[in-house]
Structure formats: C-alpha cells, structure tokens
Amino acid sequence: MQIVRQLDPLRDALAAFRQTGAKIGLVPTMGALHAGHMRLVEVAMEQCDAVVASIFVNPTQFGEGEDLDAYPRQEAADAALLEAAGVKLLWAPTADQVYPDGYATNVSVSGISDGLCGAARPGHFDGVATVVAKLFNQVRPDAAYFGEKDYQQLAVIRRMARDLDFTHDIVGVPTVRDRDGLALSSRNAYLTEEQRANAVALPDAMREAANAIAAGGDIADILEAAKAKLLGSGFHKIDYLELRDANRLAVLDIFAKPARLFAAARIGSTRLIDNIPVS
Ligand code: PAF
Image (cartoon, rainbow, N blue to C red):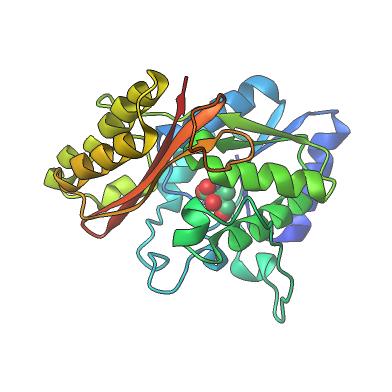
C-alpha cells in the first residue's frame, strides 16, 4: 500500500490506477479506525478495483472547545489495518495540501445541516462538506463510502454532491455495533469502563422508543420517557432525541415511514450519537 501525503504523487498514483481501467473507491476517514471503518473498506473492496482510504483529522469540522487536540491519532496502526484489508493507497495529506495558505472557500449545505448535530455543533457540517468536496476533487473516485452511523453527515454529503454535480456514487453503509448494541465510534475510546457499561443505555432506550412509536404510541411521551431513562443511566445531557423523516430529515410529530430516530447524548466528557430506523 502506498502512503501519499502530497497532491502531485497522489495524482500520479491515481492516473496509474485509471490507466488500467480500475474503478476507484474512496473511504474518507479521520483515522482511529475501528470495525465500522473497516466495514466501509470491505464494501468498497467488493464494489471497486482500487480502494483509496484517506486519513485527515479535519480541523474545520471541530468547534471551539471540542476534541480536535484529543482526537485519537494512530496512523501506523491504521495503515497496517488498511494494508491488510487490501487498500491500494492511503491518502494522508499534510494540512497544507487540504488548506493551503490563504484558503478562503467554504462549502455550506443549508437546511439539511441545520438541526440535530448541526444545531449542537454550529459550523460542523460546513467543515465536513468543505473537506469532503475537496477529497472528492483530489481523488475523483467512482464511488465514495460513508457510514450510516453519521446519518445526517451522509445526507449532507449526498445533497452537496448532487448540488455541486459530483457524479460518482455515494454509498451509505449500515452502522456496525458492538455485541451489546453500542454503535462503534472512534470516540468510544474516551469512555471509562463504567461509562462504557452505561453507554449501552443509548441503543437500548432508542430501540425501546422506536418499537413503541412503531406500535402507535404518543411520540412526545415516548421520547420524554427515553430521555428520562438515559438521564437515569449515567448520561448527563441529551443534545437531542428526535423522530425525523429518513430522507429529508424533517421533524415528524406524527409517525410516517420512512422514519428514523436520532440521538446525541453526553456521558462524562464524551458525546455519543446514534440513529436507527423506525418501521
Ligand atoms: O466521518 C468522518 O470521519 C469525517 O467526518 C469525514 C467524512 C472523514 C470528513 O472529515
């Protein structure tokens, strides 16, 4: 596996792949890879001839006081995993290859970026949309792979790609969970043993709420009960717990398919997010 940090050698390597007619798949990441990322790689390997993974901890998607400095960085271990999985090229750009001196452009996807994590983390999705647009232009993949765990991010990227005429496929891959149901996340590494044990309350409360909503219960009451359960199980703040339309992400006061339940909640200093279908 080649590890490339500068744009010129990246373009040379990609041109060589293209010359063979290879379908190129891109798996964008911020590193600290876990089985959820490796599932994206696996799906990309099934669908493409040459898989490129990127690792770039993108500063513009972190707000003030967020975990940019603490975000786990373990490139050697990540590279070993990617190489073993068959990835052909790791694009691990230096910061100036993404944001050159005097960088002044921002990609902002209005509407779909506004609620949920967009409300709790102002500017976050501008940072995501900007860096992903740049990665798309740098790699020019035939398909790009993102986890449904970050469902709003996936929706923002789909809308950005459509609006800016990126024509490659955007493939969403279902969330990978630990055996007890907690969605895999690089941020799970921040949890103490006790917090990790308590964190399972999040998928448990969501599953219970989703079942109750699908059975026709009162949505507001069900969501309040789920929040109370979380606050009684070690979580100290719920950023949101909402039922939304799965496509447009509009809030649903009345259950209508396709619907999804979205949650973000804080346990210790860690903010966990999750989403599940309600059907
Ligand atoms: O999901 C992530 O890891 C990041 O938000 C992404 C898509 C790589 C952009 O920095």
